[in-house]
Length: 368
Image 1 (cartoon, helix red, strand yellow):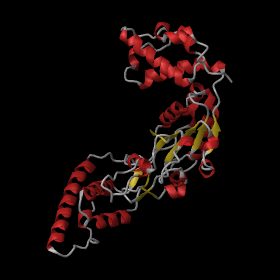
Image 2 (cartoon, helix red, strand yellow):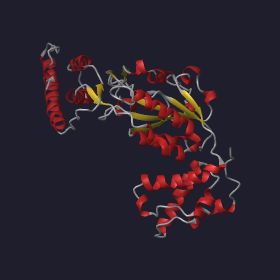
Image 3 (cartoon, one colour):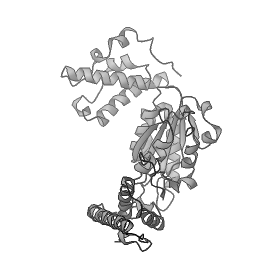
């Protein structure tokens, strides 16, 4: 295993104080090496058929480590810890394989108004599986549609069925690009960005939901959507550089799913990076199925889901039919809570808020 603590590129500084500083840096680095060596011993060993790809360039990492040796302060130690972990794990990372497109069939039933999107993803999976390694790599997509039609919930379930991690960022709440790209280590408040942190797992495969991309703030000097352009281009994303780490890494395996309510508000250059899908309101004939599907998702995804009966009472389905998927989810959760407070394992119509039953038509969405 390489000993990055004794890098031949490191030139010890002249002067007694500088030498003490260099010796301290060497000590910290040796301790980090020993710590991460113990962690590396417990790491999962890849199977012979596991697909792995380069995550960073070893020479570039060594250069970064050498440059840090003469820099004092907490930021130096934080970077050394991050670099040390990378060095010990090595430059290769796992990339998930594309699943069989058939795993998405139930997604067509659970999210019928997203059927066009699901079919497109299935076609892309067929394409991925033609390669020798069958690695999953999907181009960015945009889901545009009215609020409450289930865009975020669809993103979560799509990632789950693809078998990859899911993360999301609300772009309407982000004040600048710093949350994604990090802040330079020269600042006292420096920090790594979300992209860097997202890729510190064993696998580089992850689905990112870019929520409300049409509401990116245009205030301030570090605003707008320009910073997203490079992330959405595979060539530039393969050499992505976080402001904090300053080390180029391969971020091209991230699958971006953006959502918007009004795609006309998105800058032309940014919009051109996506395959765009217009998501309609559900058909009236699909809503009963959607209610049951959302109920099943609670049973499957929540730690308390197994405490309830596997099927939803038909009267509850009747009461919720016609609401948006977002409202159905909210009302069902309230129903679960009320049933739990009365120590019942079944949600019935009594558990649906009275306002829904007294004024059922005033709050319902329109039908396609």
